[in-house]
Amino acid sequence: MPFKSPRGTKDVLPPETSLWQVVEGQARRIFSLYAFQEVRTPVIEETGLFLRSLGDLSDIVQKQMFQIKKDTDAFVLRPEATAAIIRAYIEHGIYHSSQITKWFYLGPMFRAERPQKGRLRQFHHIGCEVIGSYSPCLDAEAVRLAVHILKDTGIDGFEVVVNTLGCAHDKKRLTIHLKELLLPKKQLFCEDCQARMERNVFRVLDCKNTQCREHVAALSIGTGHVCQECLRHFEAVKASLGRFGVSFKVDPLLVRGLDYYTRTVFEIKHPGLGAQDALGAGGRYDNLVAELGGPEKGAVGFALGMERLLLAKGVTDTGVSCAGPLDCYAIGLGDAARGKCLELLNSLRLAGVAADMDYGDGSLKSGLRKADGMKAKVCVIVGDNELAKGVAVLKDMRKGTQEEVSLDCLTDRVKGLIC
Image (cartoon, rainbow, N blue to C red; front, side, top):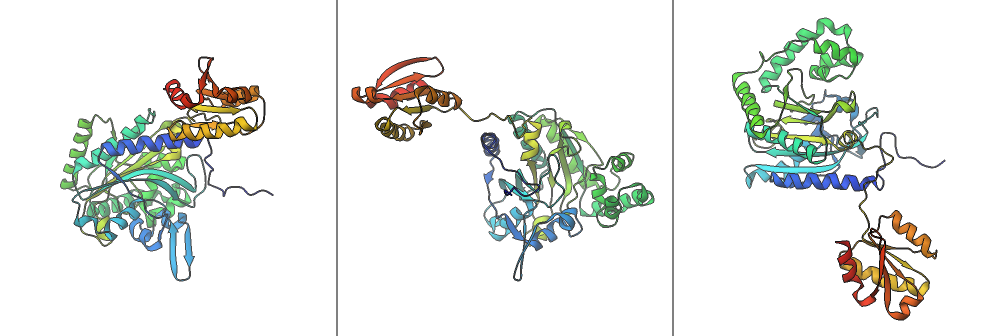
């Protein structure tokens, strides 16, 4: 029986890979507009890093981490990137040489959860972190940057939702308040939420169970748990979002289930994704750098899910046609002609022309069909007669015209036609 990819993973095959490259290229370009630089961290990290950063009672730590043990070493496949990036920031002493650090990343993350639409065991994030400032303007810039990437990718119809959790003291007050509201109704919630009420009550507000969502929607939380300083911060975030021209909705029920989030949190939701409707999310985490052994540094960031982004864009596993056209396709009729085509391909590629050739020994008609299938702009045809005259037939596939061109001038002529 043939092997298959592990459950909850996916092969990304051509031509869909071309679309991934386009989206990643667009993201890199936009990050550069905001003065971000790319960082790459290992796919594996020490288990303790996530126990400390995410909270040992979070769903990710309790249920979803892929663990790797080798002798006395304990590693995990990274379930998210923020903790790894903060680890790298501290380990390499970046805070000594940079007041504000702006880093972005692209790559795979791993969570051992039940696979479903838009949620895989290996998934991919496009994200960023800003480390070294408590400015509410940076919270707003993070939201604006995420929106910029989505719009540049051609996605619309999404909604930006923001909230404030307040500082660590405010979160403790909110935890008590949520338990007071939820515990009397505990039996009305699913089994997972009943357990969450004891170990991480914030996760109850994130549950996708229909009945749980209805009970959560009826809650009245307000901002009574948030201190005045954090309220002023949030007002400044909202004002900055207005200056950036970002439309948003405030939702007091929006939380992030990871321990490190403080103050601003946000999600970008798309109605076309169903229950798992978040294209991306993020927020501020002002205590994480110090908690992981670094200095006191404010920080904010976000991550967009690549798979969900493509779902919102309307891409499915089949019928994707995103590969760009080939510049030139060469057809050699006979062994000697195919040998000459190899030389021509080499010259064309060195000149920056995307080129391929027919490596079979089929007819001219079959070769032209292949060129058409590859969306070649021009086709170079060489046979024994052309070799004898030192020329090639150059066919413009878009116009249907053709001409004889000296082999010595072929590269320049091809470049002229494909412009």
